[in-house]
Length: 116
Image 1: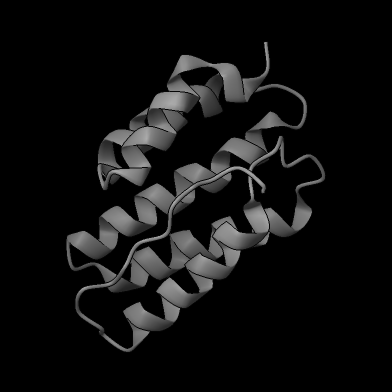
Image 2: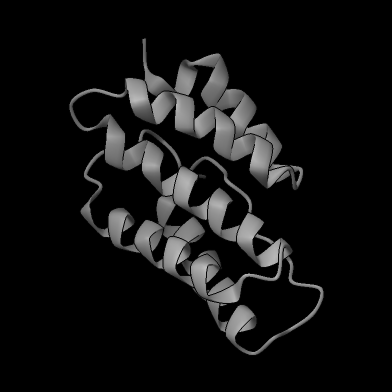
């Protein structure tokens, strides 16, 4: 079974896209510990981003930026995006980091989506 077909991945994406970042990170973490071959880095992208945004919500800017940057570095190494638009997600997360650093309020959080 493809990792993107796993109900935990589907639920994690849904939770992420509806702003439930801590709960999304739980789904992605479960998958991360079971991942094989090239799956760990792929799933860790989503884990790092969801944890990073959760840190922002808790007012923890430095750890948030660190987690998000780790996710961005992982995107660069992904060779199989499994139909997820990682490039767009990366661009959105880079914008998010700039907003966090500028202490912008009301950040429009990125969403995970498939390629068009």
